[in-house]
Image (cartoon, rainbow, N blue to C red; front, top):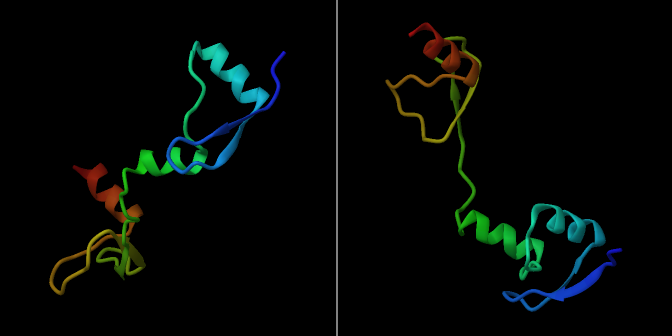
Amino acid sequence: MYEDKTLVCKDCGNEFVFTAGEQEFYAEKGFEHEPQRCKACRDARKNGGRAERVMYTGVCARCGGEARVPFEPRDGRPVYCSDCFAKLHDED
């Protein structure tokens, strides 16, 4: 039925394999065109060039445990671990 096919990525020019399994999946989904990009270039496009999120560590104001948050904790402003944060919102 299907056989592995070597394709060339239109972004980076590297060769990649369009496997028989992937071809079957494409056919089942009704996709008419073969992929034009390798997995690395597809992933890069999906991420849109976004940088990894920087996480900061603080002390949870409720339980005293470690709280990892996407902003830099400041003195006088409470931060919460994910469990305590969820509990606070469940209480509302």
